[in-house]
Image (tube, rainbow, N blue to C red):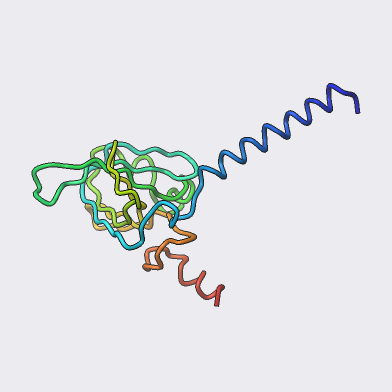
Length: 156
């Protein structure tokens, strides 16, 4: 193997390793960022959706209990592919869509620039309820994950 090809191969491997490391660092377990003892129920309108890996984010203006104001929330879901398989897509989550999200607040409780939560399920004004796909290590076994019972059987 000549030297330029070897250098190119090593550079390519280093680039792939760096990209993999940054993706691994960005991905986390539920319990690293969210509090299973801090459930939230958010009702409001979608303001934006970020269809990005490793987790999609649904932004909404959630109505406060007094009903006169809203608070911005960022709700983490599963991967875009997971959401698509669950039935969520760009058409179903247009800005202005009324939704209810059940999930868990971030451990830091910071709300700058928005409050953050991990979404378990989303309910539309039609009554349709879909799993948001965010589960895994540390996520509560609350019945929202349709694969939960099959995973439990495999573990036992």
